[in-house]
Length: 94
Length: 536
Image (cartoon, rainbow over all chains, first blue to last red; front, top):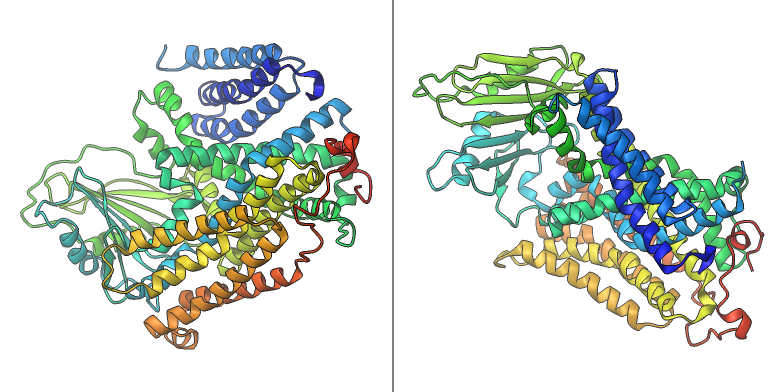
């Protein structure tokens, strides 16, 4: 196969495109809605609309990453930081 | 700007694989989307009783009472009624009544009061509209369409990245006289660049509509205590929630005409788009009015909450004071449904949507041409499937229109038969394409069939309803004339396209000889297709 990807590598990256990309999208949207200091309506707008390009960016990164492990690690790390911040700072949690 | 070779290679392959996987489904989405732009015109064409000369509403109370009684034949009053008003783009009043059961729908002619209801009404426009987001598969189809929209964005971004350094040069380069592979690749790049903003806008707004549910859940949990209606209020789809006092409802409900008139007088240039009646004919009945500004192409909505019995205004929110979320959501709506301009804008969007279909097809055909000599089953099947699914949509769609007009009135379930005609016709085209070796001949046959069937559409309308184009024109039924003329033009275009196909340019499968060992399985590298003039 091209780029010397093993079968595991190829499936790992493809799974990262779908799953880790979705996690990034949800975390980014939630983070914007909860944490951006620009008024809640504007923040939700940025989260909802900006989230899709972020999702596509995450998909591109997953394909371009040096390894599937790195793709999963970076994307899930970003999702955890953004999503965790959103949950901790949300009115529902505090 | 040039990207690193590894990035270029991965972006190239992501673009190709993405395009091949979603290509045909995306073609269906754009093709049906192009027709859905004229959904209301098609509705008026297929339902002669809804043909009105003006969008003026006679009397809402008079128009809605009879269909509402009919929709609730069991004698129970509906718990919820939704009413959508006619606009510049839509001539009929749409009515939906619910009583803890699936909603019953009706469409009313605002001029004559005639109405149509039942599962079989508006079969053509509904089938095309549902197919636009695969709603035949229920909500799973919607999610599938959303994922396809997301991958469309990925294909667009990767396509831009790999062509960025040659974007201007490639835009002025179309060489139909060279090999087929070069011609398809040139067409793909030129049409893709022309339609880039349009395609990205539709990929983004379409994904937004189909996958919005994903983000609604975390927002309602984190910000609105699990109450989704608060998010919809912020987005301008309903007025602020207030407690509605219970009053004596023996005198009946407030007049809808009066509510509409008072709403339009509330703010300058305010136009009512819809009314939602909750608790119809009960002591706590209330009417939600949503509307927008007539003097602005883009902008948020204004909402008013009336008491359904006393007519008292309980809450209101002016369109000029709409928040950014409300405005953004309605800008997306105006962009996606092309409601920010007149008919000319819709025609432009229709052509851009068909251009997007051409981008998808040319990309698909480039990929197939590159691998033409490889003698692989997947290439053969995909090549034939492209002809059957994409070009086969033409005859199937024209057949749908014809069957709807020429179906005998005594047929029990006309909507079901319309579905059989469309999907059966489409399946027949796919089977025909799969069985035939020369793909170019398949494209040409299907285009000829599309053209001939499409040109019969005005004939079908004229013979069954008497609304020949000149008669419909003099009666002020512009939508009917538009569909007839549009079908004829599409038919002419399909026949023209068929005439342009050189069936000998693509050798039939049996004629294509596999190359010698080393060459046979070799797929050209991206730079061979992208950068070397002449391709081969």
